[in-house]
Image (cartoon, rainbow, N blue to C red; front, top):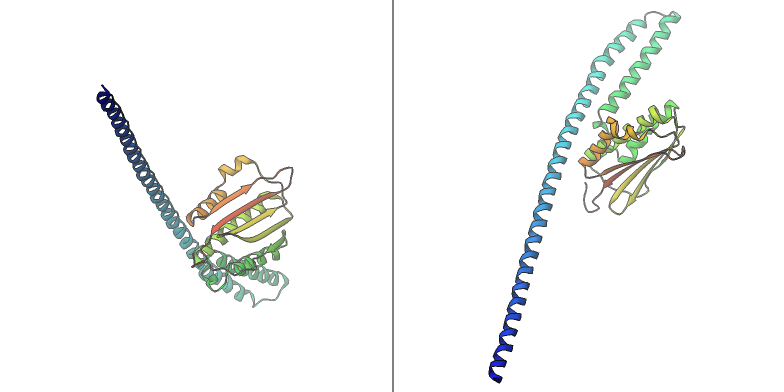
Length: 258
């Protein structure tokens, strides 16, 4: 009887151990499957994100090439035609002709400026802070708005392609302020936070309708440009007339150029 009892206890213990081992084995299988599944999902998401970035980069490159070609055409063709017209008018000295020459000269200068804005190859020898300063100098010259620019004191490296994308976003943001914000002041600040370059643009204007945020092609373009370099674009609407803030977040690798 005692032996039978021991056999029963042994059998129960064996069954418990077996079930425990089976449970552990099933948990290990589930855990392994979950890890592989998560890894697979992340790989798919990474591939999808990489494809989206490649598509966005291709679209941006096509757009930049179009702007470059347009700038060259303006400089080489329209600019030359205006220059010839100005030279022909130099033969006359009446007041009306002098005024016409001045207008043509202004048009030539505007076309040269626009050509430089469309084709940024000339900016390869400048760092990002210098390119921003050049852009703001043109805006200050117009006396349309007061600009407070706070550049970075620290040095950092960034690829020219990324400089172009950032500058295009700044141009779009500043143009939106001039067109829609009715602002008198703009503050532009560059910051380094961890491995990110932060660019904040704040105006003291009236803000805009939140519906405009989802319908604006300009805002969509800035978001797409930032996404193409793994960055982010954020915009905070005005509260009680306190203005609007645009924030561009650009990831930086301190070990190497972007």
